[in-house]
Length: 414
Image 1: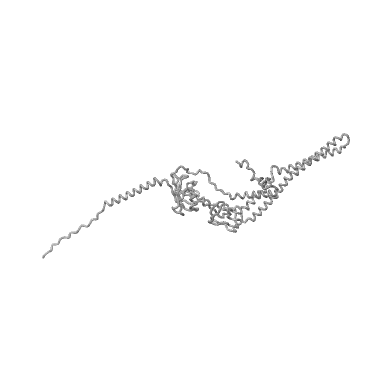
Image 2 (image 1 turned 45 degrees about the vertical axis):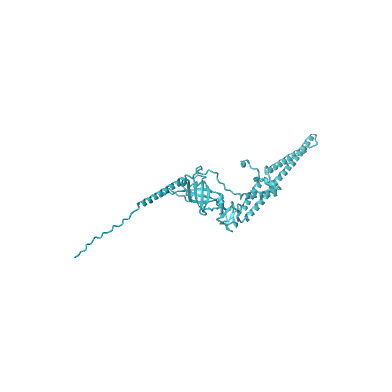
């Protein structure tokens, strides 16, 4: 049997994957360099830029909201402005029914006119009583002369003692009449001494009633205290309102500011006067506002909340507090890109300048309006007219006699 000689199969060895250690090392080196570069860039950015800036997106536009509230009770008969409308300072906004106030004003004016005429009579009585004193002095002098003549001839028996006694009685009677006339003159002068018709206390009391009634009548027209935009109008025609009822609000958008709420850990380097860059969600990052830090709130937001947090409890958890920082805006930028109260802002403060104070020490801001001042001047003009018409004085004389137009006292001058 021919047996074939079998050769054993010789298996080929499996290919072993080769790893490119050089490529791996290069990638790891590049990654390390990238990490080091990023770290170096972050460190450089922090040292050169970031450490001089404090930023927050917890910032909102704020401003004055001037409430329009009546000072007298009445019924709304006209509403002359609506939401979103612009109003000028002094422009009438709401009108109340003033029928009752006008009647009260007419009654007070009539009372003033009557009082002026009565006081004028007192000054006329001064002259009358002075004339009576002169008459009584003449009567007394005549009686005294008559008594002297009778006494001079009584020794010769030409005049009886009875005539002499009657002459003495006449002198006493004339003296008593003169004393009575002088008392009447003094009593009347006590009512008019050191005063004029316009400055007499009775006239001043009546004038005060006229002024009160005039102001009550004038206050039926509610003007805009400032220029701004109407918001939150709730006044309706026919509505019965009382003093203090909010009818609408006027918002002067030209005087808004930003309250940026910074964390307490970010306040260390914030100072008054530092420049601030701000952007608004309404305009995006394309519009950048420039402002300055003008002050810091006296407490955190939670301290002035309606229900302040009570931390004296067993389950106390520390929460980072925020302090409102007021930022004044550039009026020219506000005019170009107006903001509304409540809009969200992003604020970035440059803290390089540390010369400012940690608290504001500037003079307090003053908000005032003069739209109500004319009420008093108009009332004074009306009072002067009534006094002039009923006292026979010129308008200038009546106005000069009014206490508001008198020279200022030393106390007021100082």
